[in-house]
Amino acid sequence: MTSVKIVIISQEHRGHGISTAAYFLGQALAQRHVPVLLGDLTERHGRLPSLNKQFPTRNLVLWTPPAAAMRDLPALLRKARAEVTGKASCILVDADLTLLDALAGADEELRMVDYLLLAIDHTAEGEKSADRLANRFLPLRDRSRIGLAFARIPPNEEEIADLPEQTDDLLPILGYWPADYRLATADDMLAAGTAFPEPHQAYLDAIARLATRLMRLVPLTKIEKG
Image (cartoon, rainbow, N blue to C red; front, top):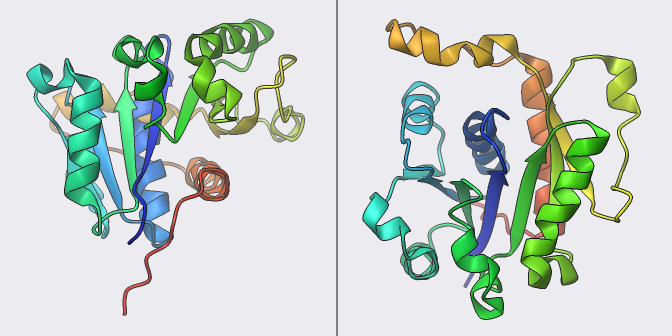
C-alpha cells in the first residue's frame, strides 16, 4: 500500500502568497499522478476554497478542518493520514508557522512530517531568518527534511538564473515562485465578485519545477490509474 507523506508549506510572516502557491503546487502534483489531500490549516479558509472552486483538479481534494481540531495538530495529522491511506499519497498542508509550534518541541511528533517547505524573501536577511527558523525543527533538519523556496521574486531572468542552491548554513533551496501582480490583487477582485485571475505561465512553470523537486526529495509516489 502506498505510504502517505505529509508535506507542510509555511512562512514566518504572511505576505508570501503561500496559500496560492500551495494550491497550485497541489495541482501540479495531482497532474503528475500524485493524489493530494490539500489541508487548509490557516484558520482563514478563504483563498483555497476560491481556488478549488475556480480551478478544480482531478486527484486534488481540499480539506478544511475546524479550528478546534487544529489545536491538536499531531492528532489531526495522524487521523488524516489514516483516513486517506490507499486514496492519496500526499497530504500537503498550508499552515502558519505559529501552528507548527505544537510540533517544534516534540521529536516524536515531528517525525510524522516528511518535509517542511519554508517560504522566504529572496534577501540575505531572508536566508538568515530561514536558518534560524529551521533550528526550531532540528529533528527535521538533521534528517534533511527542511527546504526553502523564494517567494514572489521579481520576474527578472538574470536574477532567477543566479539563485543559490543552498544557504550559507547549508539549507537546500528547492526553487521559487515569481511575483505575479494579478495574484497579489486577487483578494480585492474576489471581494468585488470577480473571478480569481489565472496565474501567468511563468508562475505555473516555476511551481511545476518545485513539484518535481519535491516528488524526488520526499519522495512522493505516483499512482497510475488504469
